[in-house]
Image (cartoon, rainbow, N blue to C red; front, top):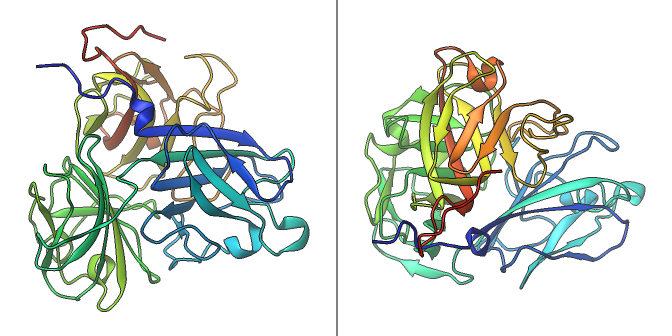
Length: 361
């Protein structure tokens, strides 16, 4: 059996950065596919901190369809209609269009000299009705890469939702189109627990979220909590299954040292998202486009999904051919005895399907 079925990770996930040039509309290319889920963030502070804006195929592109990871707003809550928005998904990226707020009309997207990043995932570029669960869902699923976008109308009562992946997801992120928290389930926490993407809180326990039930190969469970199943309200879930050589969802224990914990993923990471679960701390995002050479300075490696702040400088992690290694002693990423979950996507597999090793950075 081949080590991996995905030799070109950037056919399914890719990070793209750009510098603003004050044009509108502007099409960003280089994604390598038509994205179904695009997460954008201004990296520098510019004229003030800016939100993380998330767009997906099912909700559509536009000036009031974004969701905000650093807030519990409904769609459109980031005011992209004023400060710039993703107006279309294209065959190799997406188009950005100015908002209406005068000199700040492109603050979020393309302000001259501003620096920006997007993380992009491919689902199926189409949608289909899914009746696997007790609640009918609309799904865009990629069974090769283990990623699906799922939409349903909340019932406010226990139910199951079809995810379309054919294998059980290891991580699920849910958001209501209402003023509600982002809810995250992760296999390493267990499905009696949840954690919020938009806050610093550690993990919490509630049977009303996932019904204390792990996802199956066809469905995931939601309870009566309005954060995961708001009655008569549109709900969105991002579901991630683990694929050898491409994605990994796990946990590690920090050691509090600059010679920090090594996390084996089986590939060279292109993106790592981490969160401490046993204490109050920020979420952390690292990727292979914004970082420098390992242990070099300066680093511009860390953005925080739960806050609007600009990226931080610091030697947080080394990105290696087969995983990542913690290099910071901070409690947010490597506290001695601290427990952390992570999600990770590949730049390259450790070994390709043809048996070729990936070289270390």
